[in-house]
Length: 491
Image 1 (spheres, rainbow, N blue to C red):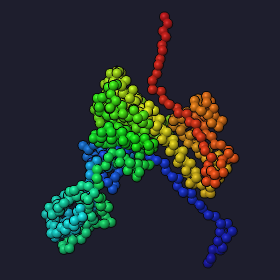
Image 2: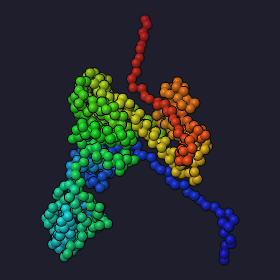
Image 3: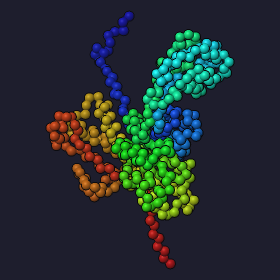
Image 4: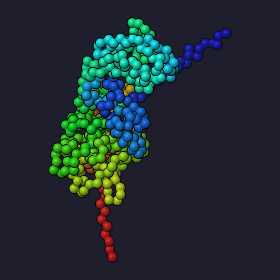
């Protein structure tokens, strides 16, 4: 029996789901670049949530681990770290087999192979392996060794999860192919997990990269994934650090940290040490730290800074007075401390009251690191929020005063978030004014957003569907680092 006419003949309801909001950049994660051949140049970067995960991949002696352990030792503990591959020297072609299940690792199946074989091309030359006998092997390391005895020009290893084949040569002519079936015998290419559709895409070798070329690649491919950046490598020269800092300065969306162990950093007359060279360039998006004991000390500063929760109340920080777990504090004379201060460098230093603190938490420009970090967040928050206003609108934002008011309200909401987390606060505006704001006025809310009337917009901008230009006055809350106290005693 029919249920009657559909109600939609009279009342038609359509649900229009708005798209998910675009996500802003990840501002609480660092990327450490290293030369260890754990991550290939196709994958380039891996995410880690614990130091145990880093140790599982890199062991505990790799530079990447030594830098990561300082990062994860911070309190509060960072939740994520990326480790990236820098091709410091020419790399080898390789192929990583698929991860084998417990059933695929069962030695009973491998012991049944007495005449196995497969084909694989190494550096463009086909290798045909035959008569492989695994009947006496007790584990997959033994299987790899049996294959290695018949394989020339490349090395095969069992990692505990997968087989990896690496060419013995380096550079752009160093290549591997997928494994294919042999002409005779039992095909083991699939058992090895080295076939197309199972193995990772073969990685060709590449020539050596300069540090700034590697950073440029990561900024191009993974820019929104991380904010902090440093090298887990002690071999960079001051020239190379400066080239990377130049690039980061032009990018203006990341922070580069570098550690110097040069005794000349403590010499007020030196102009060649890293701290002095960074100071001469006046970098805002890079910083340097002197540490005589640890070449990766800057990792600890990044670990502390990047735990900031910008959505929480009163959560922004200054790096001054913070701790660096795992770093031995420096015992400096006043003149040595003054030298570092004059160079706008940073140091984890011991004080006479049995405490040690980061001092001064500053960039070479003299602007404090937290101010730069907070400004990156602020720019990203406003940009993302206004984009989502336009992106999620089911119709359009009209080119009217009312439409501009929607954009202004969105900007103000981002400013309110900056007041909530402690980045902005009420204060006197000491720069030139605009709109209704004049120099010397008090920003009662900590900010002022101005949008000119739509009637003032040019016809060309209107036809190009541009908004009016918005202007924002924002007053930083700042932070107290030093205190002068005068005590008058009367008898």
